[in-house]
Image 1: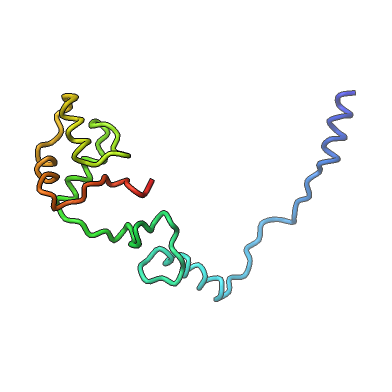
Image 2 (image 1 turned 135 degrees about the horizontal axis):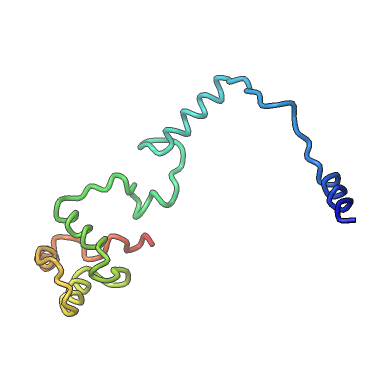
Amino acid sequence: MASTASRDMKGFYRQKKSGGITKGKTSKASTSKKQQSKSATTLGSDVAQTPALISHGALDINDGYDENESVLRQFDMNMAYGPCLGIDRLARWERAQKLGLNPPKEVETLLREGKVGAQCLWDGRV
């Protein structure tokens, strides 16, 4: 009885397969669409950028930042000093210092000078 039930099930959900795999004709229109989609992530493209690539009105891939900002971004990325969301960089550095995590002194001097951004890399993006 079980064999008839499985046979009926196979007949009920029978798959219809086509004759085989064939390649379709490639037209110029489809080739140009492929080239356009490849260049969609390049600067100056007419194709809209996804919101993940745009933050604060500028493309993230073109963020021009100097060596100081690079040091601070490395500090933001290092989870050994605790989470950085919801807290500014100096407060995070001071918290890490109080907990004995030995954060870099260079980060403290950069933050106390005030010439760099106080918010972490992820502020407003997550």
